[in-house]
Length: 169
Image 1 (cartoon, rainbow, N blue to C red):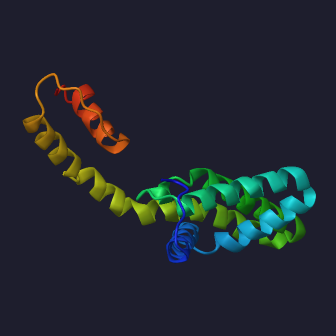
Image 2 (cartoon, helix red, strand yellow; image 1 turned 180 degrees about the vertical axis):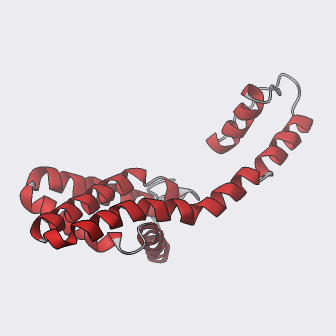
């Protein structure tokens, strides 16, 4: 139930989770740069800047009240928009303060690298996780050979992998 009425506590917890995840992914330094870029871009391009800000707010708001457990992965568009604002803010800083060119470009290069290194251990562990394989094995032992399976996308993806890649039915 994506837009079902939620309690204030639920929305407040989700907003705090979004803020923590979002800010942490930008290592807090990207947040002021992104807000600066947003401000400057809206000043320069009111219609398009307002549109992007609206898309950002609507998408983040929608997935703040969304009931899915993986809502935090659904805001990729918002991350892309915010990344654009970060770059816009940094470009403005460089143009106004040329001495900041090297540190600003360094920040733009370091943030993605830090994101990769921050997430690398979890991603490596996820590739070693056997939860999906256990699901495949258990499903295969219970389901008849030519069973028609109707499932959610998470289960479907795992079962499709078993069928297409592992050759299991």
